[in-house]
Image (tube, rainbow, N blue to C red):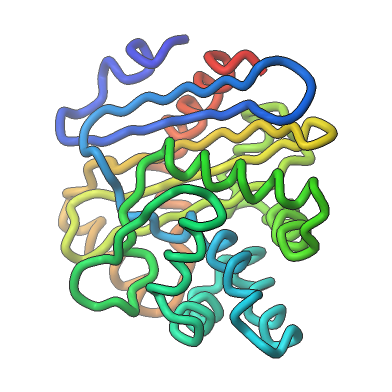
Length: 256
C-alpha cells in the first residue's frame, strides 16, 4: 500500500507525515524517504524527550540526578521529569546542543518557553536527529547508549504497536500523544530505531494530527488529562491505525 492509497479517505483538515532514514558505514548506500500531507510542521508532544535527555546530560553536573529524571522521561514519558531537565538546562541550550550534534535546527516555541512539547518539527527532521543519536550510541557514546536502551524499554500502550507493525521486536521506540485545549485535533507521533550492525541504523517516523471535534469526547479527554489519567486508548482509537500504516508504508519505501 502506497501513501496515496493509505490517505485517500483522510479528512481534508488532517495532517500526516512520515519519514525514514537508512544509513551508516558499510552495507547498502544511504537512503531517505519522506511524505507529508497537511500542515508543514507539527508540535512534537513527547516525541523528542529522548533527544532532550541525550544532550542535557553534559549540562547536568550530577550524573545521578540526570539519570533520575532522564530515565523516566524516556521509559514512561514522564512530563515532570522532562520539565525538570528542560528548565534546569534551559530550552535554548538544549535546542542549540541538538543543532550542534544532529544538524537539525528547531526554533523555540512561541509564548511560554517552559512548554517543551510546543517545539514544532517535521518527520524528516525527527528521523535525522534520531539517526544521529543512534549512530552516536553505536560508536560508543555511553549517554546515547543509555537513552537508546531506555527507548527499548518503552512498553505498550505507549508504543502504539510500532514494533509489531514494523516487525522490529527489539527496536527502540518513543511516541508522543496530546490534544491541546487550543486544538481541534489529536496529535499522535512515533519513532522507531533499529540498529543494523556497525554504525548502520534505520529510523522510521510517523506523525499525525487528526480531527477531534465531538464536544463530549473533547470534554472527557480534557477531564482525564486534568486528573492525570492515561489517554493513550483515545489516541489509539483515533490515530493508531493510520500511525502504524504510515510506518509500515515508509518501511516498504525505504527498502529495509
